Length: 178
Image 1 (cartoon, rainbow, N blue to C red):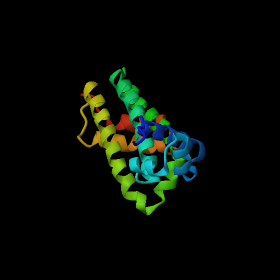
Image 2 (cartoon, helix red, strand yellow):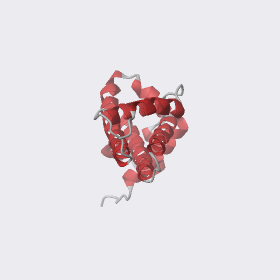
Image 3 (cartoon, rainbow, N blue to C red):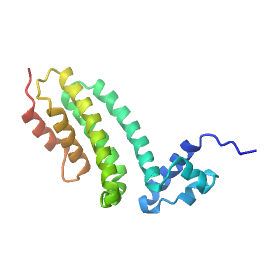
Image 4 (cartoon, one colour):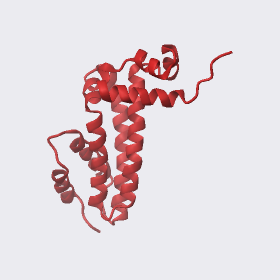
């Protein structure tokens, strides 16, 4: 009779996240993760076909948790600037956690398409939040502004040369109150 495993995917993601944060993407070892979860290496691959996909799932789970907090902050923001700061802070938190992963995989041509599609999805998520903020606070903005703002915040949050206050100065120039 086969062994019944409970919460395997959750345990795999937790173990992989711990390994990833402790050892970086190059230190992530499927055998070690399988051993920690008390399952076979083959079982890991039944859930995640590659180390890269396991890494991506860990990152997506963390992003979804951060995004949920950002959405709550945007809904409770007292002004557009507070909402944009919440978006920036969430992105900055994620970027700081996963900078080694991003640097590792952004240089590999096989990963470029995967990360580009994730980038597009991320910009769409952020654009929706930003558009809602702009509408809620009565800003009359061209349709492209939410996407432009999402790209700008994403750049600012993932590059240590930028600060939110510098980004905010640019945003003030582009927003016109109704």
